[in-house]
Length: 230
Image (cartoon, helix red, strand yellow):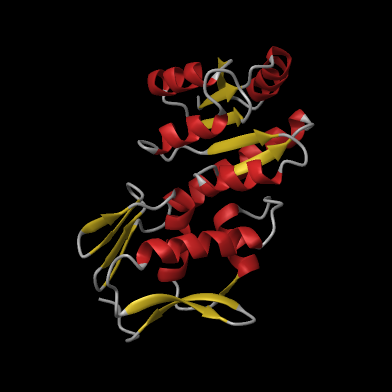
């Protein structure tokens, strides 16, 4: 039975979500603050985390950052209505999706199913890609250039993987659907901001034989000097 860690300081919310999650077949674990969330994450090794942003002791952003140091477990963040910066921040630091309050428990379960379906699909694909001095591994979510590890977020790695493993141009909408999922309701500016940060990190290392190219009016592609991949 898969484990779902629910993190929220509102006991009424955790009680309702726990009831629905159990009907979905999840073994639920409840944390009422950020410190307890980290403690239970380390102890229970959950398969997915539902995480509120505003919490005592440690907020949701801090919890995500700490978890992402060691794990790529799926994380869905719960944010306040109208707080766009919370949604953007959560995705930038490694959350897989977000849900806006107030929400229906049914919507939450649908988002959980969507994220878990993406994980299953990803697990069926080849997990390592190499071209010239670049290596991307989805086994441990690592990227190296000239054997030097590059510090990228989960979403940045998934974008680079998507572009590098296909010799085609991806529109922003394509990338949004592939990386964030068709159930994600964000806009294409999310893709642009992630690409901008990804490029900045890659530019710190020499990679003359490949790059991420903008195709104006269309989207992005992984550009190589030769069509042959080593």
